[in-house]
Image 1 (spheres, rainbow, N blue to C red):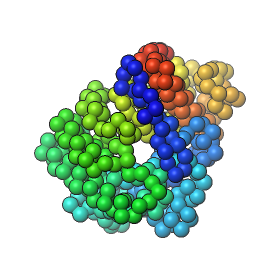
Image 2 (cartoon, helix red, strand yellow):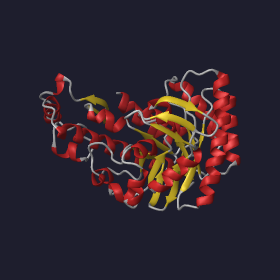
Image 3 (cartoon, helix red, strand yellow):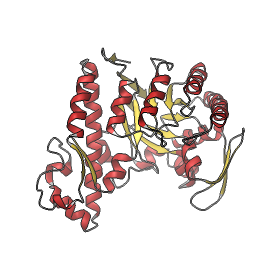
Image 4 (cartoon, rainbow, N blue to C red):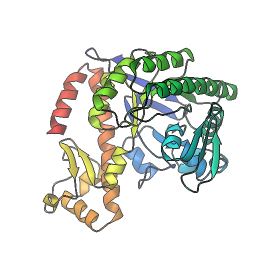
Amino acid sequence: MLHKDSGSKARRGTVRTAHGDIETPAFMPVGTQGTVKALSPEEVKGAGAQVILSNAYHLYLRPGQEVVKNAGGLHRFMNWDRPILTDSGGFQIFSLATLMDVEKKGVRFRSHIDGSKHFLSPEDAVNLQIDLGSDIVMVLDECVKYPAERDYVEESVNLTTEWAERSRSAFSSLRPNAQLFGIVQGGTYPDLRRRSAEELVKLEFDGYAVGGLSVGEPNELMYDMLDVTSDILPEERPRYLMGVGMPADIFEAVERGIDMFDCVIPTRNGRNGMAFTSKGRVNIGNAKYIKDYSPLDDECSCPGCSGYSRAYIRHLFNCDEILALRLVSLHNLYFYANIMRDIREAITENRFAEFKKEFMGKFRG
């Protein structure tokens, strides 16, 4: 940790990896299948992305572990020379796979693509991510849905801790040039969140993720779980909130001491014509933009805002032109990178609360 804001738990730090440093707080664009949809790696870097997230589950199914390994790892395979964090696939297995069966040894599931049968153990998940060449490896965990009965969540915490310990052993035996993050679970039960965090801290991971949130629970409940969890996690290790990406949620989480984020929201919404701007969200398909010759955001210097108008981009969406979704997706990545840069500066200058109020006042308009 480089600096802690004097008025909150917001922190500025650096995560050092084999493919470069990550200045935190940081947002990771999602390149689930080895690509940030519709954009080239060069464009993603130009937008200011320091690190991307790819998903081990999807890459395991297509093109396959050996294909990526034989290509020299995911960095070479997709032409990305900055850090990569890979999700273990736990969330995708529990949300996408069919006929899933969780056992102490691991999880059996059928592919959502072709119905083929597979088995993934905690050790398999670690080996898979190391073969992919990940800089930050995530343990296999069980992500429960919301709401969930307490007894089920308690058993899930037991299993997640056991799998985390096995992941740690597998990772240590291989000694890769990478980091391993544990994942705190516990649903929306404060005592189970505390217990999960305490058990993982004893295993001394390189970083800690908070999982199982943003799965349908009210925002305030998510913030409560972050309050419960963040104070238990070591100050000197990075903290990563998985799958959260709305600007308001990022500010609330940073205020509670969270350092890293990922979400499909910027690019998925961009592909559907939703632009994030300094003055709020813009649905570019709306008829009111048909003769609006202003840029998406007059405070942005991305390619979409520098050379194109809202009227033109709306026209492209109405004509189903690929350029439309590329321009808005790229703009949204610039927007998120700029938010995180400004948050880091505000923390350094001990004015995070002031910046949060100023930003959200304009954004909510």
